[in-house]
Length: 234
Image (cartoon, rainbow, N blue to C red; front, top):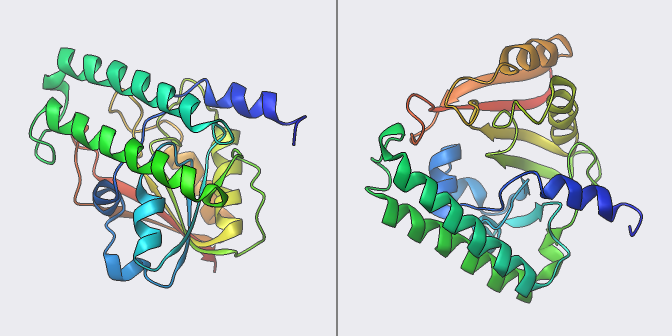
């Protein structure tokens, strides 16, 4: 593990460490609480999301993966605070580029961000075994270990940093370890549909995966309301 750490941390430093609340996950992935009870769920890459903590309380068996895990609570708290401050400053400057129906205003968005990482940090401290320091496209899990894998705000968001092969390898890996994969959003940071979506979908379908687009009850980037659902090979 020690030999792998530099690579993990190099990956984590390329992306801002912010997370979502359980309520936001329900929006992003069109989830109902009843969908989760008794299910084994993977959140990857999870960042400082509170989904794992809350879903575990309602009867799901959840593991979260992120290359930044393995650090101290204090170090992660500093990272979270800095990331939220930078994010809110940018949102204040560009409020007209977003849809505010779910949040109302920047301040409320900030409350969600802080609530997510505060709940995450508390659970990370109490239940460190739920938080696995690893990174796509190589996950330390058995085939079909999970019923559901969720991946928010990572794949398809960073076309300038992650290439087509990375996206394909990562989705194959998520589909290897989980019976169903849900991924959101399908747009890059500029709110334009990722240039890799169609190629990834065509290739996965050619490999006999079931791939569908589904509309979710969430919109923050204008027009970005679809998630990708990948399930076992037909």
